[in-house]
Image (cartoon, rainbow, N blue to C red; front, side, top):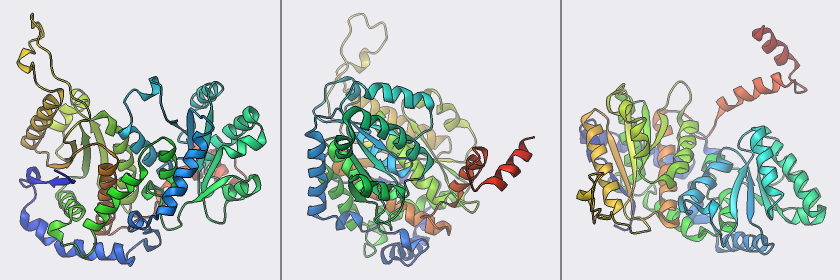
Length: 448
């Protein structure tokens, strides 16, 4: 197998081929609207043809910047950002890293994140660590005023300047921001930071294949060209001219929407490789922020199997029947390990002796899928041959396109996020931010 494979045979007891076929025309219309930029949120569709439009010169620029930072012998690259400015990079880096890279000597800098929370303990512990390490910083924000990353950057910029001096600190800061406006753009011009542009037509949750993700991943030593190539191949294979019967993202979008109409309102993304945990977190933002509006949307959840079979397995098997699963399966692991024979066999596992650990994992995967289908949980299977840059790129674009198609099928704009402003308004009022006096008065009255 050399490509991503979509298998929905275990969903056919819940969705008929006729129902899937009935959505074919709608999916083709929606796919055309995405590619021709005629649907809702058309100002934010730059991601649709992004993989195929990234030039060799752009890639070389990212790699040159990575080389310059690594020439400073840095141990750590701090990526300051939140939401899509954080999760995409974290998803790819974790998926492609040694599980214990944080405890081993590395040939490339390790990515550490800041600005993705407002935990005082996290900040103190991070700053203590950085006193003993060589590091540089990549700050990502279109505006430069988003509270979480702006606060982190204020603290860490001060530390960087105190450690290295103003001039050297400026050479260790890369700003990824708006092309012409915003606080971070202004600061970058004043200080002389190296900058990259977040495209105006690409929203944060779709931005991992822009400088937002590619620069940091290049610094960490990952093959960004292969990542983009995988996405570009999936882009070509799901173009608006590709028939529905061959268009895998369109088929996935159709099946999940049919299930939603039948009352399956929660989708669980399942993996059997712990390296995919943060890929699931990226996927949850992508689908939750894109579809969850106007009182609509499938709720995106995730589990790490087999670990979570010992915590969430009971509910999935026998709880409220509103769940369906999408499983990401990796065909071939990077390593080879077999179960040893034990003379005493006190654990009773000699029946597994000589089998690969991955074979045990795959049988757990198959056995779980069969049990859940029997328990009333539709199952969609997505298989990739290996967990590497190329197939991860294919998977990223697969989910991005399917998300846009799903949003249009729901009738919502999948490229805005008006609901995320509600908590900010309350937070600013509680913190008595200038300009929020009326809101402060109102919310304090509510709290009495």
